[in-house]
Picture (cartoon, rainbow over the protein chains, first blue to last red):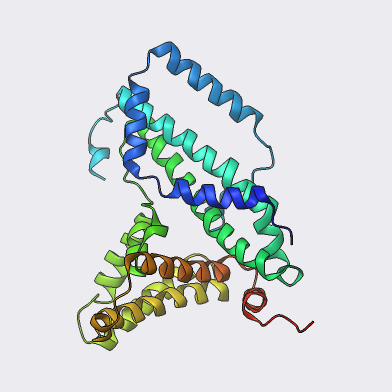
Length: 66
Length: 227
């Protein structure tokens, strides 16, 4: 058996975030909108750093095949 | 597209929503879909006969999560980029695995393609629900088989489309039969049943060949060898 606790956690987490309503995204955007500009910029900078550090071997999107 | 006739309206709200969708999409793709694919789903689907029943079942669920996270990420990022350019695009996914029927699933999954197939193929080209029962079932089957072939010229996609078409026909027959009143399934059971029909379809969709898909299903459903 090759399944690991991380894989099970990813499946469960993926199903959980799938259940998030679109409204949740809009409410989060609404909250972020009210942040002061420096805090917003800092958040963006952190996200860019995280993105730069991510695993390099990400496969192309599945739908690029079709 | 009416929005292209006007000057794009860009405001702080759209920029925030756009950035959020891009980051959310990046997270779903790079963290969940990619990790699931490389760590588990791809190795199991590449050699189904080398894995046990638990791995096969979990990899099928894993692929359901992977393809949702991958494709909805792609859509979210496209919607986000459009928002940064001042255009409002509709969402392409609406919690598809919460659907309580296949018909509902196709109203929630890849909404742009589903609507296109419904409006231009099922209704305009084939006549939709007009005509007798047989004609409606035929239209459903043709629409889903062509929807499958749209993904590629392979038997696995034909079977995937055929499975969805057949399930939609059975669902339609069931909803109009007297059995519906005699045997009422609770909502949660319908969601679970629909999810498993979709997962069954994903096995054909993901398998490298029809033979691999059959071997995969054999690994799940075949009785365990006697000790």
